[in-house]
Amino acid sequence: LSTARSASTATMETTYIMIKPDGVQRNLVAPILERFLAKGYILRGLKFMNVSKSLAETHYSDLSAKPFFGALVDYIISGPVVAIALEGKDVVAQARKLIGATNPLASAPGTIRGDYSIEIGRNVIHGSDSVENATKELALWFSEGLVDNNPVLRSQTFADRP
Ligand code: IDP
Ligand code: MG
Image (spheres, rainbow, N blue to C red):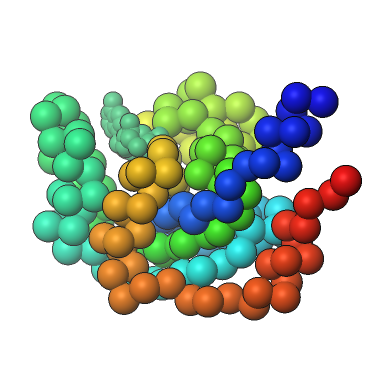
């Protein structure tokens, strides 16, 4: 009962998802998108793009002191990415659940990383880790703004049930 109540009062959010270069190169764009869209999240942004070094460094600036930071930036700029904005109830935390743990060795089967990756340095996908960071990352990657996508479908998909 408490789970149902917290789900029904959960706020609508938008999160930033990114299919990293290895996911693109391994032809995982369609199967990854399929998971989020089939679940019912609303697409608010989608673009295929190359990433500048400064954009990658800004995106991962919280990790700039880590020993793997340089390798991480090189990974993200190694080929085009797919930048995605998704809207839905509690979507920031829910998308992280669908994505799985950072290290694929710890990601459960059934999660995206659990199903499609082995190495932490090639873990195919990014998802914002908090609403605050989602807001920052969406502003960074979609500075042009999001797409106002089909409010009719949205109200049907997320209508609260009694
Ligand atoms: P997250 O992507 O699950 O939010 P973060 O800790 O924010 O994980 O790290 C960002 C990305 O940096 C990871 O997805 C992974 O690609 C890379 N990374 C994290 N830790 C390591 C590491 O120990 N070695 C190499 N790469 C790492
Ligand atoms: Mg992170």
